[in-house]
Image (cartoon, rainbow, N blue to C red):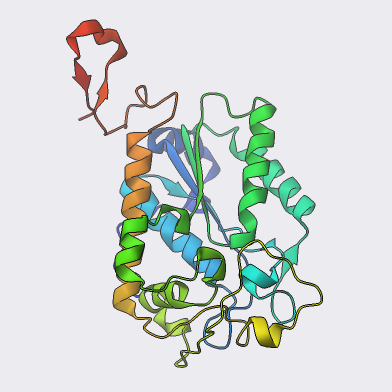
Length: 285
């Protein structure tokens, strides 16, 4: 069980086939968590990236009244500067072209369903470019017409001001692998899966640098890329709800979307294009 209370969550996979058209149409929103099975040092499980993606997706789904799709738990290969690399046992992965192909084929089947909005929540650093590429390929094929798509890695929604207030020496998201944020989130969400040790790595790797041959004894501390000292369930709770709030606000506002003023569940005030010079605004009930 999770270490936090959660609103009612609806699973797409729990529907029967006859229920799908009506319930998906009514819900409007589907959430797809995409994670990985990857080493996270001696204190965290291989499932971290999948657990976090799923927990964020489930909470966002509950607040938006959507359905959560099954979690994709095999992702892109771990890289030394963002996941410790493949020198540590337990990591499962597929090559980038295979991942794009899988995501593209899955998206093709999803986009045939009668929803309005797909939200993809990524929990694995190396997945992001492949997710975006697959989405763009189905867009170019014309399969996403009349659909809204939001895709993001959960850390991309953390505001700089919030980060500065909470983390005095932030190493960069590429190096936050098995570090303070992931450990804190897991202590809040799944404390049963977190070991007691809090190992540190005081020399986080640089972003965007590939090394070969790499000495993982120097670049990591048993697969950890940054410090874990100071991690806590309380910090994880604050971070979790900050990200969820940012995601929900982003979706409800629809900033930058062509459909921002036409969706029936859009809660942010928007100028009614038909109001002319009166400046009349519309909100849903």
